[in-house]
Image 1 (cartoon, rainbow, N blue to C red):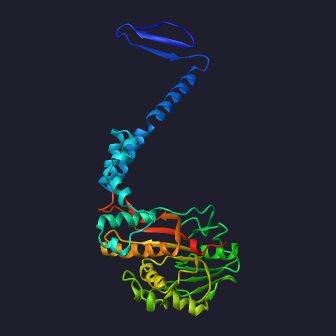
Image 2: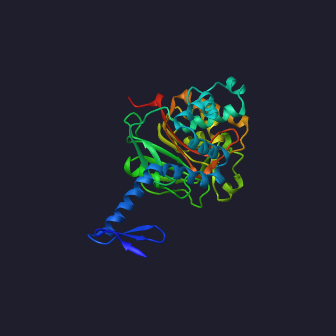
Amino acid sequence: MLIQMSTAPLQVLCCQETGLCTMRVCRMGGCRVMLALVLVITVILLCLHGNHFLDRGLQKDMQPRIGKHVAVWSITRQSEPEKSLPDDHADLKFLRKYGRISGLPTEQELQNMTKKELTYIYHSHLDNTDYACHRKIRMGTAADGGWDVCDDYEFRPIKPCVVYSFGINFDFSFDDDMGKLYGCNVFSFDPTMKMADHERSPKVRFFKVGLGGAGGALSADIDTRKVLATGGSIKSMTDIKTMLGHTNTTIDIMKIDIEYSEWSALPDMLDKGELTNVRQLLMEFHTYAIDTDAIYRKRLLIFAKLEALGYRRYHTHTNPWGYKLLMEYPVMRTTAYEVYFVNTKFMRQ
């Protein structure tokens, strides 16, 4: 038996047999008021506990893909104060101690380092900057294919400017913008495209030529036969500049994205002094998760030589498509870094 105990705006209905009571909103828009109240309470609860639910959700979603390190981090974060982790976590301590960002080791110092130490330096160096460019302007598409040029007066391209762009893959958006917006003479290179040498516009010229090391050598990671099958050729930087009559020309922007062959081209360019009169160097560095300690030493020595020439990193971008979990590193790293340099020894006064 139900007994009505009150009137508007609430009716309390009690059952004598069970002793249970229920409230029913019946007047003055009470249903809408009650619904609004429920929504407000829900929002408050989400604000108070949303991070907890988000952490649990991310942990569940990411664990199968990125392994034990992130899972351990997520679980620890829930059980310990967040501020205690940076000081207490052993991997972060090791990273801060050995993951040098600048002032890279000498060749002799590199010989005495372990694979773990070399890995930490390599990824720390490419993942961080050591120079402040106050204005960066994206040239080309916002997606993969565009690059961020430093527009500070000391380094910006000013007509008559020259741009070398290695690695096109049918995306000329960066090259077109450099010609249209800065008015530079742009020389585009790619030996893998089924496209003959041509003048794309009054400012952009294309050459079916690829960048390699001395004598046109390519990295062992590149199948030279595939390049040559398209009718392309491989030349060193010295040979390319001689071909274009640019032996003593200042290169305002040099963009290099040549899928691992940077490791054969860069040593030759450094040995022959081809990077001393380059104002900005935009590069994608590629690596493998299984690279040996000997490979890391060679590449860190290249970075040390760039640093000695005056090159400083004003921007770096990781390619998310290449993320890998390394045995020597506490969190996932990428196998492809886009790194942007300015040459501080060749800056405009």
